[in-house]
Image 1: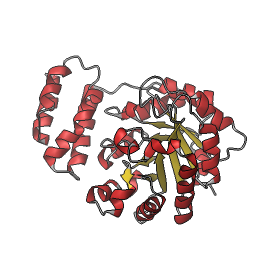
Image 2: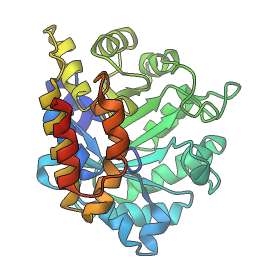
Image 3: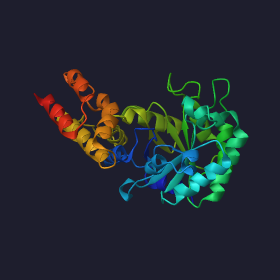
Length: 322
């Protein structure tokens, strides 16, 4: 029984919040869930760090039942450590375990992890198979089209990963060399979905930044679900916008009051797991999104970037009304 295929039959327009380092902590995930995200995934967790008993990595795996269906994403380059990490993650009782074979960041790739595995497909498949065999939970993979524009073997890779036992695959429509530049190429994601050998769900990711585009890409490329990443930073309403588009109902742009309320709730949530000063710093990356289009926000933003307490931030945000 495929956990994801069954879910997508009941909810054909399911949305995932993409795992993003230092963005998709529990505080932000809960906000996105309230806005319509169906599946949540942890920030990526280093298999090597888990084995070394690094507390920060264990903290990343924490979640509560309100976040379900929930997955823990692991990354690494060594089969043994990945299996051990998957077993540790399984003890936290998520709904699935996701393996990151797509992160393009230099510090990850230089260690042979993330998108670096796109240069060694046999090893990628072997590691995936070992994790699938070791755990009882469904295993998924998130990856990219390939290493660069001359090497985009995703159609074949997706087949091999399916044969290794994964229950769903998420494909970001860029190569590693592109990082996050240019435009995501969904044509190859569509080719994976059209491949008659593919039986598992295919989740499309890359450049979904509006309800209109979500509906267009879902229908054009036939994917089973969509994953939204950077467009959600400071804009959890993107999930509500996309859901509205699929239902063909108008999306109401959040008012200034709503933006202030949600951003303060985000900060409150963050303070429950982080020291207040650090929480205030953590949320800074979201301000540009939360208050995009607010003409008089620029000056307040500069002040917010220095604020280190909830009271101070609330005071400055409330000043936007004046």
